[in-house]
Image (cartoon, one colour):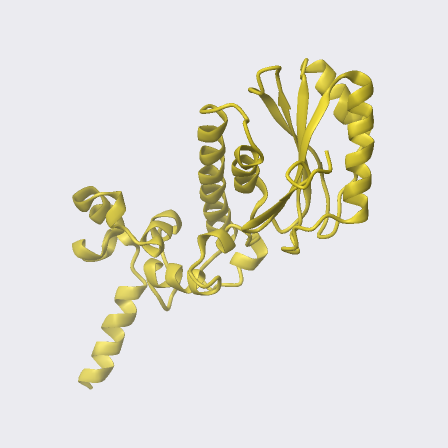
Length: 240
């Protein structure tokens, strides 16, 4: 009988929202008392989702979500709404909240980089695009527009595709570069497969853009391929 009441008490506790938990178990109060750095990844996610499922607390649910990606926030950023919703207790609203929070973190990192330095090497551009593209499940093609001092004028997504490719229009890219009065551009796209090596189509489009740029006096400084934690630079390999 005592065991029955114990299980019932545990179940009732797990079903409570964060506001109803004991003080020492509330991530928000822990944040106020001990600071942001005191919170684990699971506790931060628990604050986002607010409550758990019928069977577990928000923190336990958050731990379960993290376990599906081996507790890797980079991999968590790749999950779609439908994939997050596979977890019992995660509906569309909670899934969107998690994805939105990760996107804000990504954009903050990019903004810090863009407003700090001009582009002096392939790694400077990689740091920008790795944050944008490194964990995407689909392919995107971006262009970085630079002035004569290699300072960033703007960055623009040109196209978005599927798992294996995206369509690139040379005329559109050069038209945008002219309108922005760019002196040079850096191309970048990602390989969701994780293989950073360029394909034949990657090499072909780089050659076409380089030729168009030479005619318009807009230098193509580099073409980067981002793949998870690795990258390929056409400039570093001597192809541009």
